[in-house]
Length: 319
Length: 273
Image (cartoon, rainbow over all chains, first blue to last red; front, side):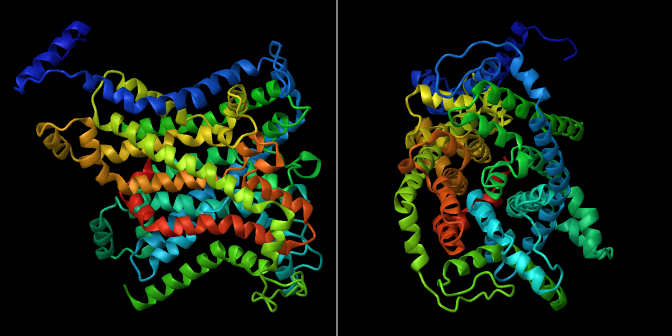
């Protein structure tokens, strides 16, 4: 069709299309119209009550001085946002997030792919390895945090090993130094995330035809060459998706930092993340829900950036 | 595959195994060590020389661990059942039924995926509070009872059922419920297992949300209760280790029991979202 059809025309066209294929006439039962809604309504209510409304309400709240223990909140305009922009804690948290992303993004986009290639081949016992590699994913971030606090402790396993091997004479302050603490939390996030992204890649690898690998092998391509020229292009879309997921989860990090710092945010609160700040303002008598909401809005805007990048890359890919 | 490649693959597999599972085994070993053993030596031994279960009993003296397990199980059960039931129904309606408003509802579900849960947590807390559910386990469980991601996973699984099979049931006069029960449901068991696993992990492992909702010490879930171990017993690593193992073992068993369905579900393409 060259002209843009009017609404009336297009429905007429659809009707013609429908009568073109003769179908037995059945009376439209009330159930047919009603059932889909009946099925979808519980999920829809949840969506509205626990997703849609809270996100709209967050915007309202961010312009108020709502407190955890009092019910009335006064409209205070953009004060929360002005405070936020002048708050050095916020800038530190954002800096931490950027460092988090800069390290997590390359590592968690590439290493899980290599792991997926490693466990893809059906070898005896491979299910055991797949399951074992997934273990850190299913463990609670609290459990993982507690395990790693012990490993990274001044007298813990890693310092113990480093000392007995003679690498260091004094224990490394993994949990008390501002930068080492951040690096420790990042390592923990990476360790916990490997299995998750491996599984996503594993699903994607199944879609690459075996013939491509066989043809490349016949042409004399080695394993590394096939990884680069067959596997990587084959999972390009998944790599982009994983990269975005890694970025978003790096911005949302909370539990690892909370446990490693005992909830303090590290020396002088310098290892806080945005979510840790939100949590600190949400709890206790001195809490400030309005300010926490403004921080939430900032978190949303920041995570929107990688999402928009994904949308853009997807559109390019489709073209 | 040549023998050389096989050996290389197994060597790599074992190295990754040590990295991923090693810390858990180390923690397990610490939790079994007796009070007379030096767990702080520079050259730590892996096998406990005085193996004991005493640390596990001592955890129960320090925090009401059985109660916390019960609380966590309750929250997890509500979320698993809710997600299996309602995500299946909604996913089916979106994927296999034709109705006015479907595109709009679908768009809403996809749009809310963009929202990071942490950014709505304050307002969510106020919603729970206005429902009178602050500091209750129901308040912890309620928001996770139906998750958008699970609805979309089920939608994806239902959509992959070939149209002909479904159409045959329509011609035979099956209504929507019968098509769901007898035709479509058996084809998506793998994805339902994935949904169950995700819901259980999400509820059992969650930390931030129960931390914000709960105040009373006797209502805490296991993850929130555990962090008190570190505060109270920072001097005895054996107890903390036993506590983490108590939180870790149930979920490891749950996953171990369902892992076959999980990996099958992954291969069905359920996880790609």
